[in-house]
Image (cartoon, rainbow, N blue to C red; front, side, top):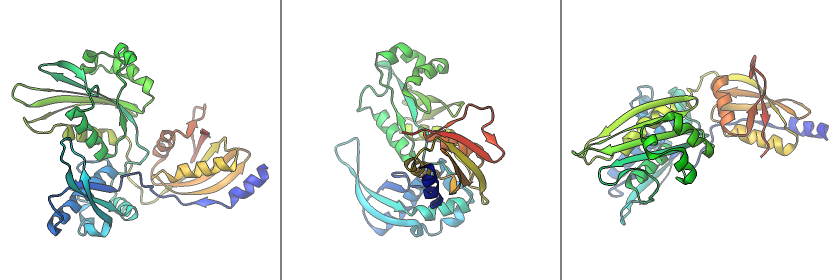
Length: 349
């Protein structure tokens, strides 16, 4: 059976490219009408949305490396449509939805040497705490109609960042009080967040001054790092989009990579590939990784599958992307990287 399996494997090779995540290459912006002038403006705004999502950088359009490629945004368009944008009010707003060609934009990003934020992004637990002059301090998320929470959700969706809110049940109440969360006590937030099995957590607090100015701060822990920053907004100004922009910009730096013009080749050994179905699952997983340029079968020995992988980043980023997928685990050995070889155990789900 193993010999037959090896013969079948020998017939397969794979060239893997960046895979589109739902909504990653699509921008949706409000428009006043469907005139040519409105369409041109919306097209530029939609392209900005998409490039920000792909690179993890809200200021990417200011890059001098990118400017030469933006003379004709229409060249990247694969489809345009109009639909209603959901609103917190009863009346929706007309929006123009633009789908961009994945291959064309990926080529621009690589030629301009821009950062790439892979599609298998970290999922974060988010604690949002408000301090109200009338009602005092409380967690956002207890009420579904919270304007601040809806604004946060739109901003995170616009950046393509997955997240979840705590349950705020008895266990959460015993693990982390409102005042402890407000104080951004990382030593208490971390253990309270562990039950949710996410890739990290965010704590964001805010309050409104007597003059109407909003002030706040955020703290996150992810990828083995913590980062703290504050934010503010003038009276009447929506504060959450800018707060989320600075937060995601900071967080994304630990997950992005800059594509190399010359790829690096690694031998990746996957243990526990016991069937042809497992082999197909391994290849499917590599297809999802933007950092991977191509994959070819190198060797099969028992349940050990060795692949020759061309990657646009180094061993650390390739390893990080594979581990975040949840389909492989590291070995119980001191050295993971042996020369140019990486080795993992396959997690059969």
